[in-house]
Image (tube, rainbow, N blue to C red; front, side, top):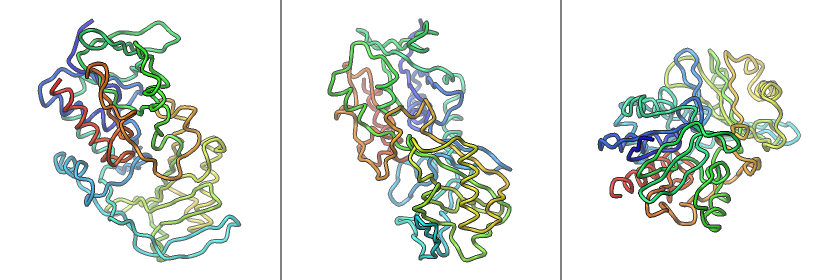
Length: 359
């Protein structure tokens, strides 16, 4: 059982950013990812060299210094969210009203290549050799000189074990508390704090429809719409910086427990888009849909009820490290500021990497 300096659990933005910082310091690192892909809640299916964000879509340069610095460091290009024109509002009865647009303040920006461009850029800095996909962590045991990590499922024989001086949990605290056996047991207060920490996006579902023309812009609309009826509750223009494909994107307004299967939801989404933006909106070049509440490596049974207001996120139980500073918390839900956002993921990544560096 080879020992490394640091094992990072999770290859989302926080985990990848942690790894990049530690690799730059010539530390030995292994990243364990339960999924068969990197990115975590950043997911961007490709269509004609356009990448549709089914996870986070925006960052705000005026208040997101960590994301802005990473974008610059990776040489990526950003562009402002399209918000020119009027918006639509749909009542519970299905009446559609044209209203003034609601531009974001401060202004929001998207990335060329989607938010996956951040993950790809960090991957290029890290290298494939330290990332192990399809490696779910089922147990973390505290040792005298570090931690031992077991890969596999608790109800099956372990696939492999690894040891490290430090372990960084770069995944939602609730998911960690629900899916990983900690030995010795975590304190009752810490376990409860982890289970009570909301997981951002875990109760949500998001769609992305692509078109060769932005018919809504021709009608003087921004693509922004809000609905009390559903199935979509919030819609925005998701187009790229240049020509086609153009896009509409947004979130389901139906709670996770009431949402149907993908085929049924997709059909209902297209019907609603046609009602709002005209019949052409029901004929996209491509339609993507992701229900994060059905993603076992994102959501737990506690996440079926969506957070309609942005929760306040803090390190669980006020702790950023435990077990004599060998087990460290990262992930956007553990950030003391900008929790739930990409900025929070990077803030927590910097904090965890710094804790390892001085350990």
